[in-house]
Image: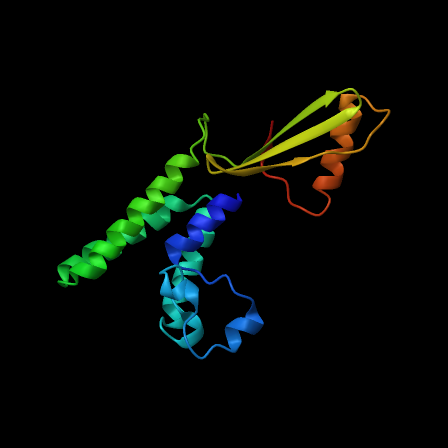
Length: 176
């Protein structure tokens, strides 16, 4: 998940600075200088353009990356038609990078539904619960938990974990 977020930050040139730092900038930061930020703090990108980039990143994280692909392709064609070839080339590269990210997230599934895949491994009283997040058929990352449950069977441990984990989160439509 962390790697996907870093790739999306680079792809859409989203800022990663704190709000207090962002609000007090007078010149572009190092992230802008190395082409990893679009410079919204000093007005180098309009608020609408930056909002579009943030929305695109949100769509990708929500599993709606095909919408983003289509929009980037449309923008690329429009830029080429209006003879803005450098902009079209940037959009082409952005589209290729997004497709590369998507290929790394591919999960073979019969459907493109959202799911959390949960697995439990127990050995000598130690437990590990692995949780993988799949959204629209794409693997968005995984995390592990190490609950302390000295005297519980696997069913009790899994049941307690799921109740606690989804107490403050919305569960996807399907779990395995």
